[in-house]
Amino acid sequence: MQYIIFLRAVNVSGKNLIKMAELKEKLSKAGYQDVQTYIQSGNILLKSDESSEKLATAINSLIKNEFGLDISVFALAEKELRKSLDDCPFSAELAPNHVFITYLNKEPENTVLELFKNIDLGPEEYLHKGKLFYFYLPSGMAKSKLNNNFIEKKLKVIATGRNLNTINKMLTLITK
Image 1 (cartoon, one colour):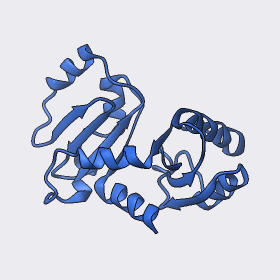
Image 2: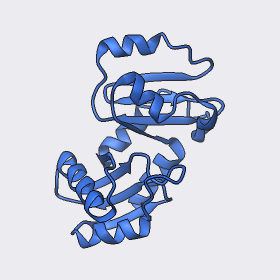
Image 3: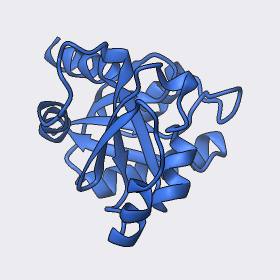
Image 4: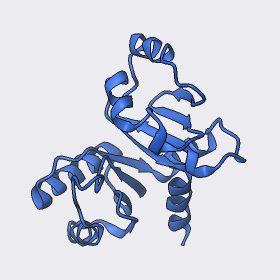
């Protein structure tokens, strides 16, 4: 099965440094097929017969053993990634680098979601759907308070997000 792997907070601000070429080599040696990486922020394509959960755990263990880092791993089947994109509530006319899909390790509790709704986000917009949060950040991620750490703290989850440019590129790489 084709999987898209998103690593949380890799190669950000000089922390959790992993060279993607080296990780690609280690994943291939571990038996994963057709391993590809895209940019240095922890975006991987590969094929595996494992379930999403087992695959995420196995890659987390490989990274711990080979790089000494405990990185959260999100393993999404191709159809799951496509559905997250298809379900995006924001207009396709918005700048794709200002629209983000954030993947959560679990659904946030209702009480936490209610508190989140009361946060003043200014012009920023979001929609929650299960283990996904969709964000439109008119001024971009750099000027937003809706960064990954904020989301994790407020929602009490582990999360990783990608803008639509990255998600579309990952889907394009699958078809090549």
